[in-house]
Amino acid sequence: MNPSRRNLLKWLSLAPGLAVAGGVGVASAASRFPSKRPPLAKRKFTSPAVEALIVATKKKIGDPELAWLFENCFPNTLDTTVELGRLDGHEDTFVVTGDIDAMWLRDSSAQVWPYLPLTPKDEALRKLFRGLIRRQARCIAIDPYANAFMPDPRGKSTLDWAQSDDTDMLPGVGERKWEIDSLCYPVRLAHGYWQTTGDREPFDDAWREATRRILHTFREQQRKDGPGPYHFQRTSPHPTESQFLKGYGNPTRPVGLIHAMFRPSDDATLYPFNIPGNLFAVVTLRRLAQMHGTLYGDSAFAAECNALADEVHAAIEQYGVVKDPQGDFWAYEVDGYGDQLVMDDANVPSLLGLPYLECTGRDARYARTRAVVWGPRNPYFFKGSAAEGIGGPHEGLRLIWPMSIMMKAFTTDDTAEIRQCLQWLKTTHAGTGFMHEAFDQDDPSKFTRSWFAWANTLFGELVVHLADKHPDTLRRV
Image (cartoon, rainbow, N blue to C red):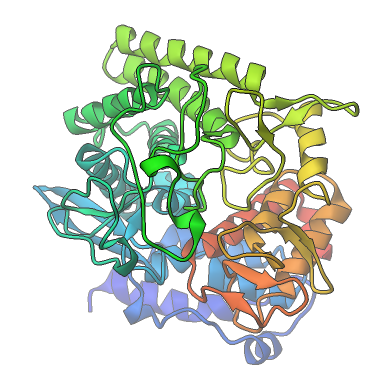
């Protein structure tokens, strides 16, 4: 064993036993809350920078159970879901969602996002990011309409539910549900990596061409000249798994907004203009403009991106805002004819999570939107004896998604709200030590997905965020 590996093993063996703030003894905490992480030898990826942050953050957490949850959850993506290798002569990173052996563009981007601030300290972590940026560019080049991809970019989908989908499936595609955010998240990741590290290495001609396809796809899905090429239908007992009108979705009036056939939850849209997705697209186009202008000196393409962003934003303001006597707020979906859907879904981009993705600030309209979606006007807001929060049709009624509770905590500076959110998250993991996709509002032992890396890592990101922005709250919760 080489010395650096030996030292890392020794250091990691000591790290979990460090006492947390609040005077809890090492032996007591360790016996009550044994680590749920895989043994070191079985972890997919280990970062000294991540491990050091875990130790430092645990010292700032007053509650030993919360500290234990953080230690289990924050590294879960690295511990269990990443596969590193080489593909076509380049670094390659494939990130599964957890219990599904495929890579979602959205989930994979979100899963590694919390580690981004640590990349300047860890070359191996930078390689992981470069490999994922390249892999995502390759996926977009295969099919910009697909949401999930297989490890083998030339292989057939092994996802049982996608085998007979009526759509144009291509090799390498796992599932082909068109969701706006599937093209937004990789740009967020790439832009964040570039801004954090200054590293230009992954932004080669392949990445440049893939991002050009993003602009083309957004324009194509404005559907100004007909329905476009994308359609999707699936034989399923669940209506949200398929789309209306031969797979092209419900009628719309072409007003400049971008159509989406599916939400971030992978559920079918009711009205094809999903407002959180369109707001995310505006931010994405601005980021593409900045990157292409700086990295390639391509002012013409940058101007195209900014022009489309302006057009979409103007259409959102005209059609995506609900006029209400108490003040306007964002709709969840619209059709351009005047029909507007008042609801929210826990999956991000959500209306609740708009500031988290920098799609909006925490202005008066967002505050009113937040109040609407975290309450009885949202049919997917659930309140029970265990917790309250937002769910969605993906898993059904009464099922709260921890992700929504995390978004509530991310988007407030109210100490009481933050403490309540942490309490709900701490008391609804059903003894597993991990976050879940959803849990019953009255009985957290009834939950979905025991291995959902995005929710785990997002929880870890929240704790790190609070340690930085609200250390007293985290210490005293």
